[in-house]
Image (cartoon, rainbow, N blue to C red; front, top):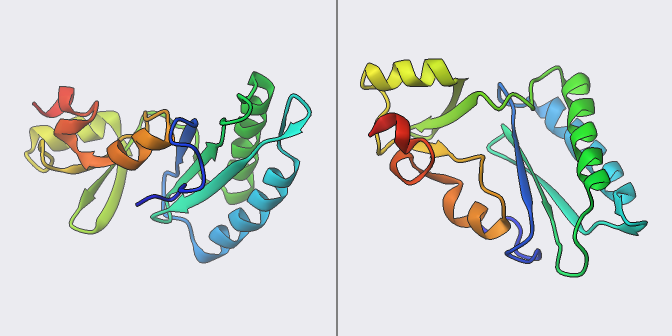
Length: 160
């Protein structure tokens, strides 16, 4: 996948999952607003070398290159405020950590954690189902462990 090839592998990453697929208009809005945000994003009064990618029309992934300077708490807070602003602008949920995303074939679905557990009980989801592990912390982890079978993520405690 390597969506952040110009960012150090140990740099931090944050994944925000939408409760629904973004429309073409929403993708355009995200693209416009992310450039404005990144142009003004600072840590310790220095520009943050960051990237924002939208993946699968559903996930907004922020990565910061911390090779030269670690990002401060205020800068992290600024990125969360940006996500809240996007939620309002796009009329979507991006901060609901109780959403789970998984694949059926090439299609991606989102559901609440209780719904996910019910799908497991029904046998519609198992340890081989591809899930999105939004708990990864670094670019390297993101590249290797974001889109994986449930048995290779935190989801394994639910399916095995």
